[in-house]
Length: 287
Length: 292
Image 1 (cartoon, rainbow over the protein chains, first blue to last red):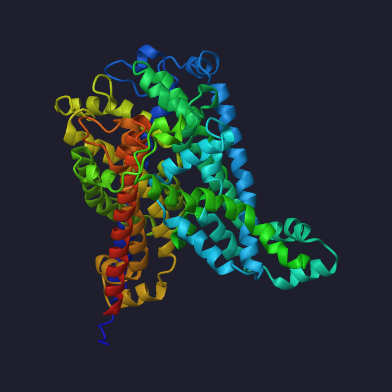
Image 2 (cartoon, rainbow over the protein chains, first blue to last red):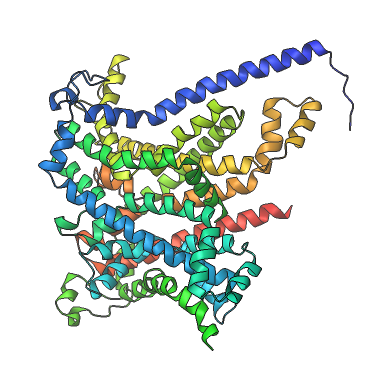
């Protein structure tokens, strides 16, 4: 260890001042970067409120000069976006059933000792490494064999359970004290009541994260609705939106209104549950 | 007796689904890849014949397949460093201060990661539009001529990749920020006392301590690029002239547009093998790195 000459108080202060100035500049830079990153969304919302003529005007206007909600109305009256929205919500709700199944499995892996536990858990981890491109065609054929193509259940089934979520539930549930479960059993609670009234409430932190993530991935899901739903009645918002891309290249206002219908609910969920979303994605670093 | 069944009751619904849609399909894909299965199989399974490795030999002679593999490789080689460096840099800068302003900025960088790709791609194709797009307008202000963002083969690769980088950084920033919590403040303070400047501290202490996070992000980002699908699918549908056709787009088109189930399955097995090998090599390199 070398000892360095002790610096005078004055130069310490000037270093601190320089460091504060640097932080300020970094803050300004990051602020500009953040605005650029978020700009496509601002542009989307602004355009969705413009009359068609204005959105194809050159030079473009940043803010709508004559704001109108006509394109949002158009989506739900002229086009079938009401139905797409309902389908999307149903797919998300089916996803929540999957969440319950994964919590149950995580609980079994965490708190029970049973034959086959080890290799079953190995399979759970193995599924995390398999790319969707490999399972795409076989899953379509399997669902076709089960007569589930062209159903909302068929759209939700392939992604209903994920190895990673089961893994997260297991990790969290191992921290629940076994004594509490024993006490409940001694009080005569059945196994499912113990799960429902003790395990689930105690897992609230991980449950909250997973509920938010399940909502986001169900809401945004694109590949499976695209493959499984060939009947327009079963389209989700994402597929309806992709269709709009092909049909109406001349009306950006309408497209942006449709994109906003997909994005705004996610933004609201994100703003309200930001902590859980961030936590959830930081957890994916454990994978 | 009753007790022994209970864990199975809890575990079996999820396990059943996982086996059906996670494990079983791999075997199905392997079997189908040795047949000439196509849409006619739905009418009569007798139309399916075992053809051995014909699909694979055809695949390796298919120019379009090699173009797709080449594109995917190029996307990965350029895209992985771009995303890792960019997200690490932003995370380090965001981590400089724990003030409210810095914390609230995180959300902005993160939003692209959680919004639907279809919606986002529509917005970008509007920005890229050559007639009334905003990007060309802004460039015209500084005297740049019309740019063919999505119809020039090389530029289309760039445009599609840019959207993916824009979307891909948010998640990794969060992972790096979480990892930065684990860097002990004492180390940095000690280095300051020794007179180390900001750069020196960042490169000699912080970044080496983030080694595992950097490794993890590199592996997952590589896998994501090798599976690249959504952005080119919506923005260019793999065009122009296949310039943005990734391996996944190629497989989707063969499988679901041309209904060549056998042929596409063979391709998916090859892609799986490539991903597995690349990941294993990365894990190996990591182990070698730990040895010193």
